[in-house]
Amino acid sequence: MTQPDDSSRPLVDQSVLDRLRAELDDDEGYCTVFVANFIEYLPHRIAKLRLALTTGDLDGAIDAVLSLKTSSQMVGAERLAGLAMDLEVAIRDESRQADAAVSLPHLAAAFLKPINQCSRQTLHRLQAQRSSGANR
Image 1 (cartoon, rainbow, N blue to C red):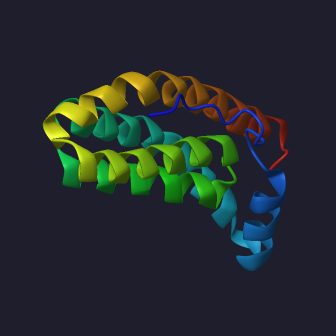
Image 2 (image 1 turned 45 degrees about the vertical axis):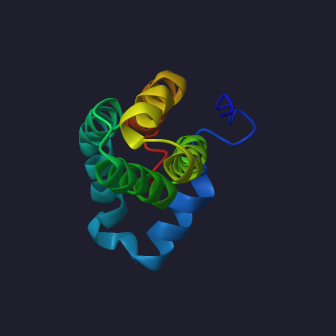
């Protein structure tokens, strides 16, 4: 099991949001609502992931990590998505080799702190971009 470190990825890739805005013809502010929904639900996604990992719930952990990864990718939260991808790989690898009730809490110990830190940084960045009008 490796320690997660995804600092080489950008915290938020603005080009992803720009592309989303262009695809949605954002005259109605759909992109802004989409980002606001991500910001609102991120703590719930993290809590669901924490619960699944710490209780050894393999199906719940896979569901939670996929939700975190996908939603992060969709708003350009590249570093958080990368951590979720690393955790997903670790969950799948560990679940083949060991009892989930034992391996998932170990993964929680290794991954939750960096994921929590990155999620806070991501939220701050997205909120700052939103309040400064960087989301256009």
